[in-house]
Image 1 (spheres, rainbow, N blue to C red):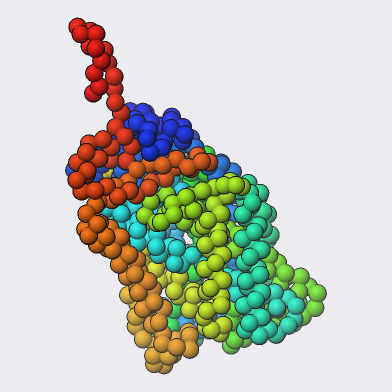
Image 2 (cartoon, rainbow, N blue to C red):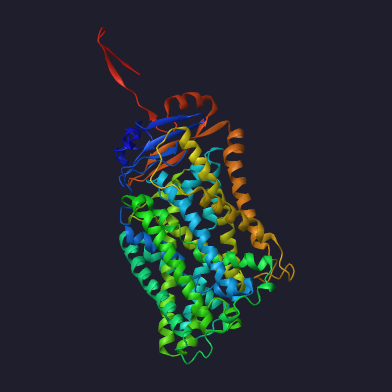
Length: 586
């Protein structure tokens, strides 16, 4: 079946026509309680079929079309190769108990990330003109109860919009570079300064911020390749500073019997933290020409390349330092490697500088990617101050989301105790992500069923069923297993307080999101004698979003008659009545 048959008549309209008072040209496809619209953006000829309660398509991206094949690879690669591989190998080794199992866990992490990447690719093929990845995919996978998932995910995304762990790691490496032992507050101060610089770097231009992230991405790729090659040289016995490079590999699985369920799960969480970023490019889909054709090559290439480099980096660390030294290094394992191989002279300090550049690049790409997700949450209309989230004035960049991330990161750097901040924030960030990944993988099955029922054509990317089911099971494990207590007792985890604190905090925050939805969508309208309806608004710079309006119960019937499912006024067709010479409106 030709895709052109399904192309919306509204696919070629401009953003300027999509305002609250514009008349509807959109194709509405009925599917029981669900109503789907079909519309395409200028980034692709393929239409996006979506449930009408979702944020409207921005036919012309107000952020431009500056993201190409290289940028998409760097967006993923730079977020993955950020701070995780330079900071988490020690915690992975602690949790698994042995070198062999630790290396195997990095392979497991690659398999889990690959399965979720396949899920993201299929979602992107369904919605090729929507940026924001998870914000869009959850919105469309679970359109009922109406606005529930957009609201919960939007509030959760706002609450978790911080990058404090990465900023803290960067600060630690900067002090290591300066050969200085900082106080906790010095680390916090440098972390704040670093994140402020990163925020300013992306705030004034989209094109040049992407170019800057590409350059830094190339630097960090070279850095990790250098670590991997150096590790192989060390393993070959060619570095006199390392007398026994193969010591760890002679009995690689010795100590595995000491691993606990808690430790193994904590290790896997650390590994998944390091792989987070394989999905980052999906936040920019509507800024990419021919996005599916580009993503189906760039996304797997970035993940596979990163997985190989991770294995080489871990082998390098293990060949140069003892197991206990790696564990004691905490977040500075890469610095430990350089000092073991090159000493504490100029060469080691130069390489530590590259690690700092790499960590800074991670801050940039996370800012760029998550700002698009926050912007998409704002475009759904479920957050207050819609214009704050969606506006790209005055520089063509999403300043509102950038400012929010900066403010929350500062709070999260200053609030937790410095010694536990990194591990706590890592755990706190991964657990909700595992929940949403689980829901995404399950939701993909729902999307397939709805599209098949409506006879919507199959897209060019379709994940294997076994891969989707593997993703479901893997993320289900990451949701359940962390509750298993450590063998050392309630305070025997990777933080000095109760091991399950991050689980309770994460669930509590998600519960708060649910309460917000219930009050906003159910309680207030009931007592205010109104219902919420969506309308489409075009902002001054061409940005298009939903806006939720209060419609009195006495006017609901008239409102629904005048507006289509997407929130546009219904088209009024005028025709001549020949016999009377009068006109009539239909």
